[in-house]
Image 1 (cartoon, helix red, strand yellow):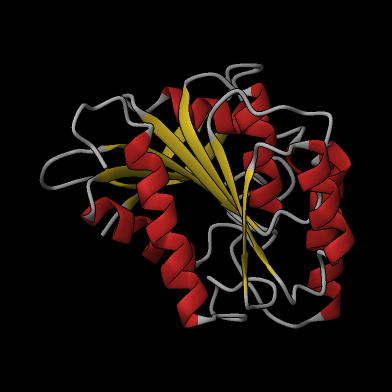
Image 2: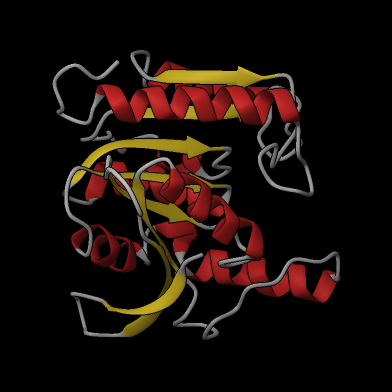
Length: 226
């Protein structure tokens, strides 16, 4: 089990929380997991623990702490949804919280990887383009990537999208491919949030994890990795 730690933004020193899961055996690298609009939920803490067991020391920064300290909840309340979507808009879908992402990257020994889901999927895309120190990035169903197509990832990046995602229409996926023809975009027979409990699709979650681990391994800089 991990623990909550404090980090500080390099831009202004703002203190924010992050969930930290350390490794108990051989370390394969560091991993920054970027949350959806619901914050650092129990599901993401469990995911961080899972990756830590695989050898990835993991941090999950609470990117909305500037708006509401320590928020972590998901339910169907329309008022809550509106509040969290508002947080996403205020953060410009990740563009204005990259200081927190960079602080998490800097807190880990290299190689450092990143992955993100929904809001965090778009943030991961922006981090790949704007942050330093990332070895590879995996973005899961980042709904606002289509608005940042002029960004070019500096770290090797893969995208995981659902064929039946009601929030990311086929035209958006096509636009991403057209703007970045060399980018690996994996499409799954699933809807939105196919890794999360509310939209879980077992085959898609399993395959996307395998592809992500292979992507990280290929870009770890360690000779002999698959």
